[in-house]
Image 1: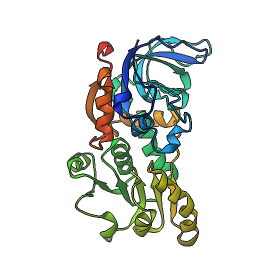
Image 2: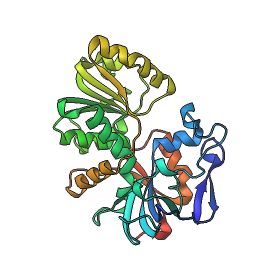
Image 3: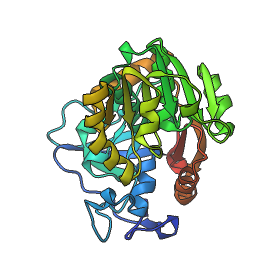
Length: 326
């Protein structure tokens, strides 16, 4: 099979399309012929080994040689311990917790990673959902307690997590303000944003507006900027960010909560099949739409990751295995 492989940290120039063996199937695994995979910021970070926390699994060289966490495809074989998925089933899921390997023609991973794909959902749409959608859902619902929030700010709203978060927040009845670059604002308006801010022209922290919940997808600003515009008992949730910002949050967050009752938290990535199913149900009901910016083939993975790394993506970037699309 063909796979995009890397053996050392670097930029996209360390990626190489190679012919390798189809992975061996274990008893609790399913072998999936991949039809589509999506690119996440985590792929960009792991490729470069930055921030340093992404080297914990492999200090000098990457632990996993094939990137790609979100995939959708058709089951080709199942292990003897698998009883809830059958050969021929169309599935999708986040495989980051059980081995990665999405930028390839086949993958063999734990069957528990997968959710059955509904017939009306394309492979591309399915591949766009798992990691970004679950992060948005968990950040808003579980940590952000969005059911208590009337006014929500999403910083970095134009990417994968942000476009899902905007749609989910609107389903909970929130008034949503989205912050991103000018070229993404029309897309955000089209999927429900009540207010949009071009961060190159305006500073949301200086506008005099206050929010019950802030979801921060980029994590580049000081925690004090967010604290300033949170309502009393408001919540700030960081999804990703630089090592310095993460450390700042971990050190100062508890102090801010103790003195001002403003909760400052970071979301730890937790793949969850129940949450994947919940998002699937929203899609089937017509309440959630994956926003796909561009589609690339397997041999264009370098371009796909670079496009995301440059910060220009509106929604998600999807890699399509053109030789097995249906």
